[in-house]
Amino acid sequence: MVEDVVRALGYLCLGTRFRRIGERLQADTQKIIDEHDGPVQPALHPLLAALDRLGPLGIGEIAEALGITQPGATRSVSELTKMGLVAADAPPDDQRRRVITLTEAGREAVHQGKTVIWPRIEAAVAELCRDLPGDFLQQLTTIEDRLADMPLARRGGEGGHGASSR
Image (cartoon, rainbow, N blue to C red):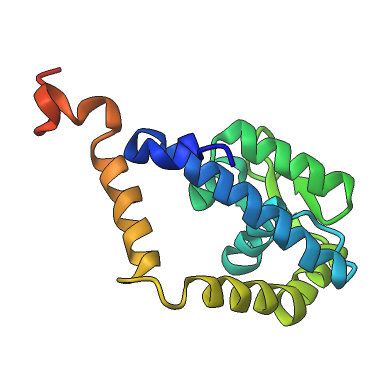
């Protein structure tokens, strides 16, 4: 068997490991969605959930709520619009801005997600993470917060001790 170089390189390839774990989770999630004839691919469910939880949002607000780029939010909204699950309308007070809302079909997709698909996915991921040492979700939150406070480019200066002088 060939050595798993990404795993062997430890922290050096942590982002790559997160990406491949994410890709595996997305693929397995798609299988669960397919079991229930869900119309929406896994990557779009968080956007639907954001609109359900927070109500109508602009693209920038969606990007902020999901922690993604504005172009990424725009692409996702475009996909959901083509599917008829969201609508983008200009509010009366600002014709330049677009506010994204769930359509009736979008509300139905969210209902299916909340009642059938999302609990199944959440239970499967909780089982996967059940016996991990420490609070895994809190550890991820801490990593995200630390990256927001100081990106990698400012970390690991001289010999890996503290921030560089840049």
